[in-house]
Amino acid sequence: MSNPIVRAVVTDIEGTTTDINFVHKVLFPYAQAKLPDFLRANAESPEVDEQINAVRREMGDADATLDAVIAQLLHWIETDQKVTPLKALQGMVWADGYQRGDFKGHLYSDVAPALRQWQQAGKALYVYSSGSVQAQKLLFGYSDEGDLTPLFNGYFDTHIGHKREATAYQRIIEALDLPPAAVLFLSDVVEELDAAKQAGMQTLQLVREGTQAGNTHACVTRFDEIAV
Ligand SMILES: CSCCC(=O)C(=O)COP(=O)(O)O
Ligand SMILES: [Mg+2]
Image (tube, rainbow, N blue to C red; front, side, top):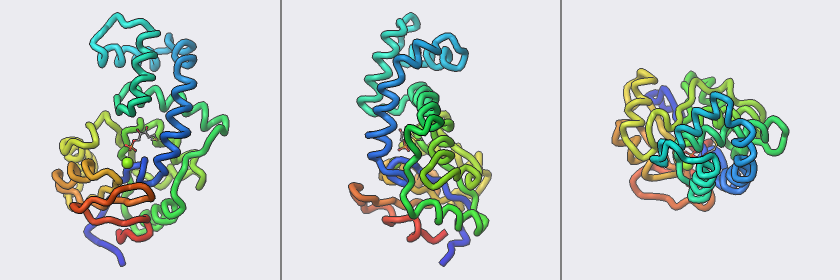
């Protein structure tokens, strides 16, 4: 059964399209291991220098040494803080890992067929993750289901705002130029769904293994249960 009101789907990644364990047990440890050497080797490059200075601004210390910046980044990884320059740098480090074949982006088996079906039904597909746009494109581009990037119309990261704040979803709605209720947001995290609902989006919680179902949003366990 289709839902003609929905014209666009915006999906979260971690816990929604992708096992949380892949992010926490493969991607984060990889970044933790490689980031120090990556920063020391590339600190002079303009794109890395820009992120190092963004970390210094977050630290409130414009003169922080590279060692202090590295220590701050490792602390943010350990405590899973969604800080924009950390996410940008993680994306740069993961690029190497995907390109070398050290890992592939994990997707639950129900995700790719559903995305293809929704695209064929004329729905516009977007990603909204705390991971950087580069990291999102890498995960879907080097996924264990092949390159899924042609399925997506666009990507949003924390440059548009944080995922638990309604303003981020209002900005996404403006960017999509659609009525709020024509946009369906998928996530495992109730606070993100609350923020999207506050902005007027339709919401669905993905309750994958290990996720606690809330009672304020409709729930599904797989993408093939979603009528779009
Ligand atoms: C884009 S893959 C890496 C995901 C990531 O870094 C992260 O923090 C997960 O964020 P999400 O918003 O997808 O829960
Ligand atoms: Mg999530």
